Length: 280
Image 1 (tube, rainbow, N blue to C red):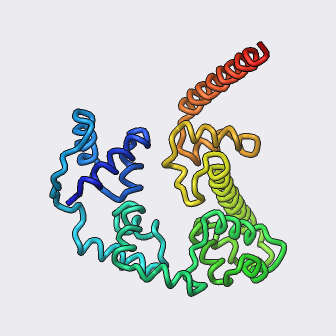
Image 2: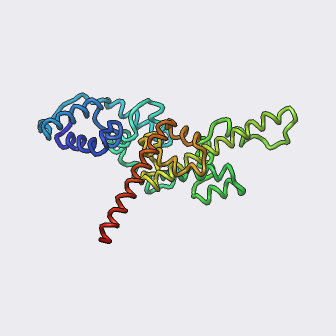
Image 3: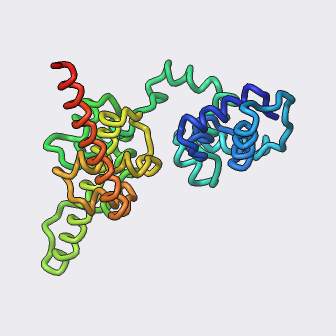
């Protein structure tokens, strides 16, 4: 059941976000894509929506909402873990359900250190420091303000199992027959750490250049935004690495790069014209 205010808010946000269905629904937590399209078409025709309330069957039942929020609360309070395990809902919808069914979780987070939600950028930095450290894991954890088990838990979540097993292997001198295998495992660890560094820098640049939050999913950015991130980081990482991490096709990158350069060129011409008129 959606009120007039709910529907008009959804339609205006949909228009503001460039008619991006997924982005609109993720931010609001409602409605379905078909409903939003229907509301927008009605709004286009009349420049308004009917004021009577529209009753629709909820997409998720109360039992599904409870199952999702219970899973979140009992699995370290990770949004991605719950949505991946259950296959639903979107992160924005899950947050709305948690606010409704578990409002006390915010108070717990303020009163207990264990409830603090650390930004993805901080977790990635911590794991990189752990893997490349010249000091003890205890010192790395203390510098960030977490416990050693928490630090290792972040490492296990962010790195592949093969890389983790390589780090925890006994440091006995390798036998000749084992040396090649060990070198392969070390190389796998290096690749994982580099991938983690790329993810970390993409999040950081998305925050600096695009003014996105540190928790943004880079895969959900527009191709133009991804192109801006690639240009900002291509002096540090190779183009294939950045394109693969952002899920951006090579042809799309060069297309949007040409569009951006064209826009910058005309912007420069406009500035020059303005300067000339000011001098006159």
